[in-house]
Length: 225
Image (cartoon, rainbow, N blue to C red):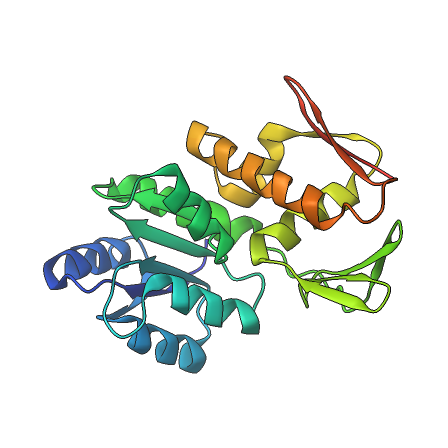
C-alpha cells in the first residue's frame, strides 16, 4: 500500500504525539493538529486521504470539522476518536459524516487496520445527476431528496445508506455487508446506529406510499418501489 496521508486532530498533546509517531512508523504521513480549526485549515491545504478526529476539541469540535469537510468531499474517510460511548453519541457521530467511530482507550493496531480498510474501499462515484425514486428524486453528492418542488437535506450517512439501498432496490440487501461497507464493522453499536438511520429514511420517504424499506429479520433490508 502506498503512503497514506492523514490529518490527525487531537487536543491532548501526549496522546497526539503517540498516535502520530505510531502511524508514521507504519508508513503513514501525518499532520497533527491541536484543535478543530487547525484541522480544517490543514484539510483545505493538504487534501489528505483520511481524517482522524477527536470529538471534544477547542475552537471547532470534531463534529463541526466533519460537517465542514463533508460539504467539500462526500467520500473522504473520517474516523472519530472519542471517550463518548453511548449509542446516541455514536449515532450523532455518523450523522455528521463519520465512516467509523473508535472509543478511547483504543489499540493502535485497531486504528491502523480501520484506516487502511476505509482508504482501500473509498469510492468516488461520479453521480452528478438526479436518481428517480418513486415520486421522489435523489441526488447523492448534493445529499438532497426532492418531492415535487420541495427539497430536503439528508445527512452524509443518510445519503450513503439510501444510495446503497437504491443500488439493490427490490432485492434483499445484506445487513452485515452494509454495516461493514458504510460503518466499518457490523458490531452491536453500529447495527443500532443503522436501525436509527433506516427509521429516519422511512420518515423522509413517507410522502410516497409505494416506497417501503422492509426489514427482513435475520438478513437485512429491502427497498421496495
